[in-house]
View 1 (cartoon, rainbow, N blue to C red):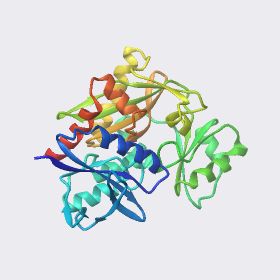
View 2 (cartoon, one colour):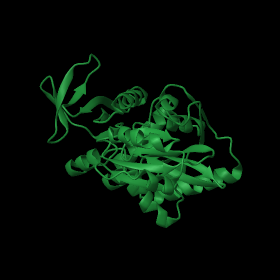
View 3 (tube, helix red, strand yellow):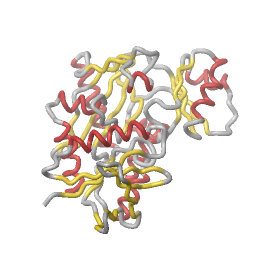
View 4 (spheres, rainbow, N blue to C red):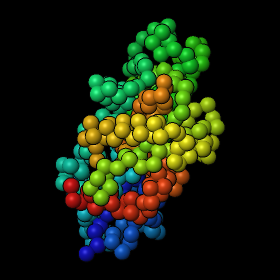
Length: 325
């Protein structure tokens, strides 16, 4: 009997447009012989099932069901394609846990921790994971530019602490530009992290649970045409994403070991994509994404393809693992 799969997409953050693209790719790719698939849009003002003629039917949040033409539809599993809040920060994971609904991403704690760059890096440092020097600010804190620069140097990156897709990020070269960059990041989040610039090869590493095993996908090298891997570079073709990465065997092995170690330390499940930059021949962690982009242009599907895993198998496996865990 075919399973009913709810593909959640949208969200409450600036990443909602990318999430809608990811969700529709999942909807198109899933095997229709195995699954009945439903596109569920999650927004602050509405949770709705959207059918193929763009009719909307309200989701009953009590049990995550939907009434369509007097027929109640319930779901066997949720495929999470929401980047940012509330799909990547733990809120949807907690909701589904409470109502007993299997879902494809990691659990609530892991989602909340990885979404908070500051807390993630603090958790991993005692395990020997190398990270850039950083300086954290909360909204309303006194901004001491001299102290910031003394800690992280110039140039530096100013980032929203809890945001993705390079929203709220700036590269700062001069002290006089620091305050404007901080204000820009505070538009996305009430916490920001200011990080040392690392000048080296940047790579992205997918680690997933596939057929019951934790596997590291082929590594992608990031070569941005812009000053850094910003929104344009990620989504508007202003970068080269080279899979497999043009790195030495030594670099490859070091990165695979660290990425898999992080996945296991955190008790991850489902998909993850970690970003690293090499400094002094060692991979330094930038961040971990637990609901990475799933569009045809996105890095994780590119890596899966290089590993011989089709989108249909990648997404179908995520559902089967969620159903059996």
